[in-house]
Image (cartoon, rainbow, N blue to C red; front, side, top):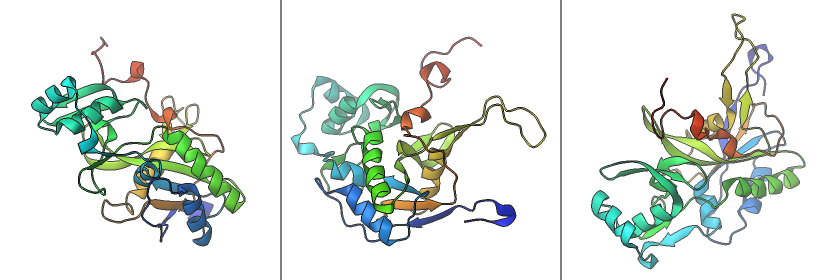
Length: 259
């Protein structure tokens, strides 16, 4: 879709009619069918909430079936969280990055830094907890393959989760799984409007699409997938790992280094 001056205009629309997803459901085919019926075309991007991915992959845990260990019980005493939840948080974390009161900021085994290792208890039955997919990039690739086969061409896929941000209030959707396009666009070596050479400009395109989808993807919206059109993407296998800053370049984790 072209706007003034021939520039692309971003259009977002929710996929309607996605049923409640349960373990074992063929989510890629559910999404591919809805996408083909609701105008998604090759070249578009589909943004999918991880909740439906996790549910279809069986990443739902009953808290009363979790046996907390000593470390989880100590963490529960210190934070006021249920010990069963603390056991899951520890299991899903490579390490706890920061802790204050009942707030736990964890680094997951995927490398994501987020609250409670990404474990969520919203939009699931009381007593259940929803974990992140084991491999969100692989989940995105399966969805991408079904979409591309159904629609006859490349469709990008972003799997999202809501994260907080250092120094900013509120939550935004970010990409935790990507397939079908380059998630980061390297603008270094280009020039700005004044002719200055760009030396440190990476555009996190997958995160930008994820954040935009959040306008339609509220906690109570029941909308698990958003289609996006009008954004130029570079064909590539894609991986959300490219969006994770390497620890040696991260000024906000670990020990402070001298300037």
